[in-house]
Image (cartoon, rainbow, N blue to C red):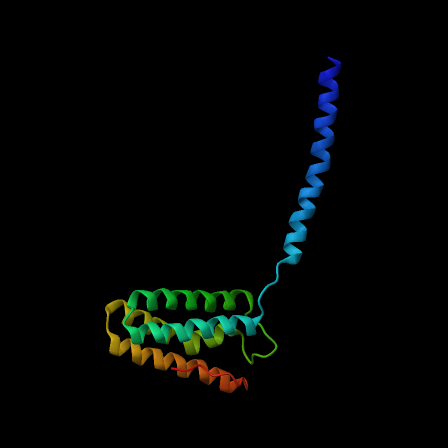
Length: 145
């Protein structure tokens, strides 16, 4: 009986000690996680954008489509998590809706249908729309074909 009592105390002590420590580690992990800012997300978009153009030129439609979906997911994440930014004249979702949503959709549709001429055309439109936003905000970096 006495051994069961001692085991119960030891188990209780371990449980009481472990729970706060494990919760503390979860908080520490959250504090250590670094969220990318808008500039870093734009760097990711630049990589996607350049790679999409390369895959279209190579005729690798499935790879281009996968990259368009990845690029669009970053754009949606920016709309959700970085929508307001001190360098933007309007919320980011405004620029997405007015400049990027249609060209991204047209590019996706052209790639899905296997129309390489339309994919190239819509890719160029997308690049121009990206650069028009950069021009509005005095951003020196340019998207390239």
